View 1 (tube, helix red, strand yellow):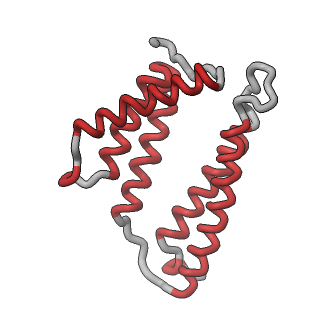
View 2 (cartoon, rainbow, N blue to C red):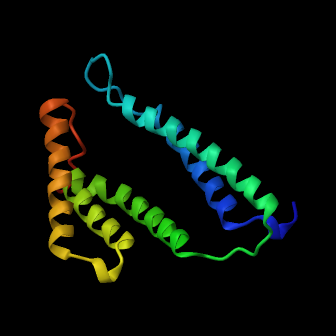
Length: 156
């Protein structure tokens, strides 16, 4: 393939594949926690394996599409959203150790919804409601029902 045939879909599906492999490797470093049939590493491992499988499929489709079409790389709105999401996820990983799951998730979810909601359709009351209620509900489910402790952070 020549250089022009590498379009944005191929590049981003390859990045997703690499991130999926990193997630799979990282899932094997999660401590099992309390003795249970399924420890805290089960769901991240399943999701990471699904991520890799879907990324491989996406990469193959992008390569096939790239072979048919030869076009220059350009950054579309979807790719810009992907890059912003990637940066936001990295920031979330840093903040979760400082502020804990609840506060970091509220801020992350609020900003993530803003990234993917068109400015004309933004309803800040609903965005704030979802951003606060959802992380608190997830925290309650994990603590009360699954008896798993989510990160508390240094400050909270």
